[in-house]
Length: 101
Image (cartoon, rainbow, N blue to C red; front, side, top):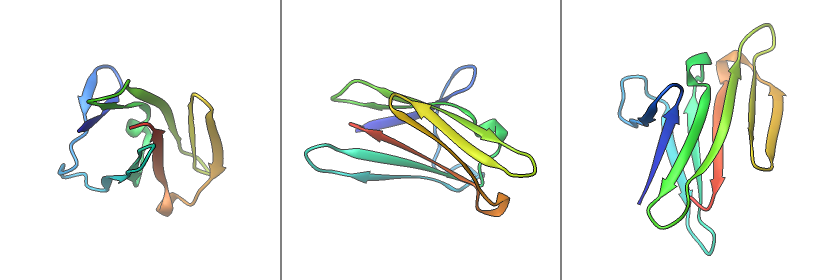
């Protein structure tokens, strides 16, 4: 059992059934379990710290920035991960991958 939360100014557990839609988790189980949080059609309010808190391990966090402009981009950083790349606004998604969650 694990819980993903999004913390902008307070801890907010992610609601996968919200009217916003486009939020899902994919979990790959094995010797090391990895969870991928997919936020489709990401917008600036989706920026913030995302935390995965599994019941049997320490929580892991990543800070996500959703930028808009002529060349929209998503930037993630936390631990060893730091990516920046241009994306089409229509395809803008944020994928948060946390190993051990």
